[in-house]
Amino acid sequence: MRNWNTFQFHDRVRYADRVSASTQPAVEGWFATDESGAAYLIGSKCHLCGTFVFPPRANNCPNPACEGDELAQVPLSRRGTLWSYTENRYAPPPPYPSPDPFEPFAVAAVQLADEGLIVLGKVVEGTLAADLKVGIEMELTTMPLFVDDDGVERVVHAWRIAS
Image (cartoon, rainbow, N blue to C red):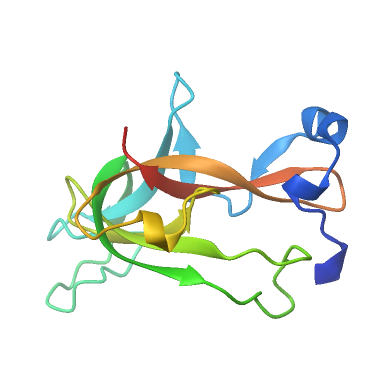
């Protein structure tokens, strides 16, 4: 296992290093991009009751009233309404990577437009909790999280205020 404090964060890595680094999701299978490069979340939908879930899974419907055990992977909405938010003001403990010095960041709970599912995610850099208001429209994007020991830029899904 990697030591958490050996990670380089994207804002701490020289520009030349960022350009040459390959980019990979921090968590495989949670999002993808379409032909235009726009990001979308990958969720699952129960064949029996139609319940959506994120992150995706192959079985075990999350609806307690459903006995369905087969879920299909589906693309989820790229837009939604800000349901709730907070600002993380403390660095996560090891083994989670954290920049030094730590800078606060906003986390958003967004209710997806078509599915009604609420999905948590970081809010893009430069947007703090003071910039957010419950009910505003948000859209999905991606952002770098860190550069790992192999020089790979690890990317996560993120929310930004819709344009």
